[in-house]
Image 1 (cartoon, rainbow, N blue to C red):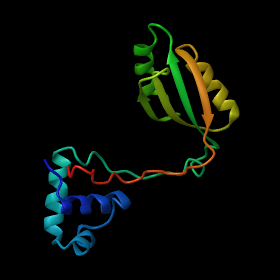
Image 2: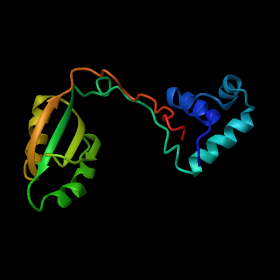
Image 3: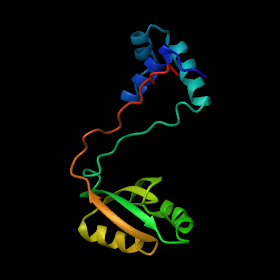
Length: 150
């Protein structure tokens, strides 16, 4: 499906506030609420809209640290790690990547002691490099219409 300009406008509104009403979006893009709902449903069915969610403050949720951890898996340890990583409650995002490392994880931790224990669990799978996040410069930036018009 080619995403037309109206769908992009709807997507922009939903990315800014997924709880915005179809009536409100419709007023802004020039459609009726049922027309907006129909377009949203079609984009959901086609997998263009994957999910909706809430952004939670890790600090207000009781975590002091957010870190990026890169892992270079030992020979034969990548597949077991890919199964294990899904069980770690600290991991909020995990990506399998190309390059020197195999994995990049975004994690939240209670404190430095928690970080140390978490790294101890990871090092059986590979070499780790940890970067503490100081602040978000860009977070949850909306996906925009690409230049080819798709």
